Length: 294
Image (cartoon, rainbow, N blue to C red; front, top):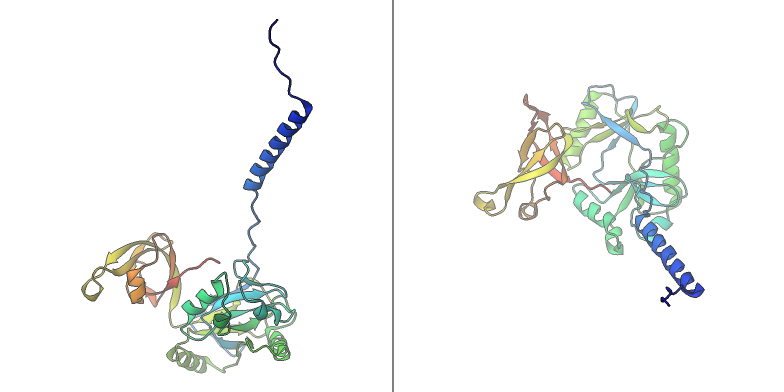
């Protein structure tokens, strides 16, 4: 008699079925990803040359910090990702939605950027950081009315690291230009002009203008130029490609540390310049920083 194939017992069948289900679950889990955070809708500034009547605007200094949005419960970057701030820093913030900059001082962007992006926050570092508020997202009324409410919220909070950005008015272009010159000579970036009568809006709007003696732009690192003289063996300049496809070089603004360890190929950097040449190349370009997508 031929040997008959053995039939799997019922318990064995159960084990096989369970293993198959777990295997499928594992594949499903491997594919499952947490949804990417959604960038919050924010008001973004246009650029002005200052050739306008500044009287209808509130003026403030443009702070070179890291923009952060408090929704009443969590502090987030512009990207929507959570800012890894210490619990004590956010626990004291009011339930009101706030928009502002995490800031230390002029010319300290690299330092504050490193502090607020460190996943394990260091209390001693964060004690240098201030949350400078310039807007109340989705609040009713004109910007003038929102300024008054913003100042009251900050005053009532009694939180040393929560501060309102100073807002002031000027009468004419001459006064505006004089104030810009003072800010820039002191190491500041420039000025912001916010239309006093404007309701809260989102997106890039001309109710908010930035006024600087130079322009900022971004480009991609595509190569390096060898250094000469005291920079021999280091990076002399970055070779950059603009979104238009035009390429150019930047050496100004590179620190000794960056010349030894330049931004990697493919990274995006921010630079400033005065104007474009007839060939579309930035004139008097100067490196600012690596662009960080939070």
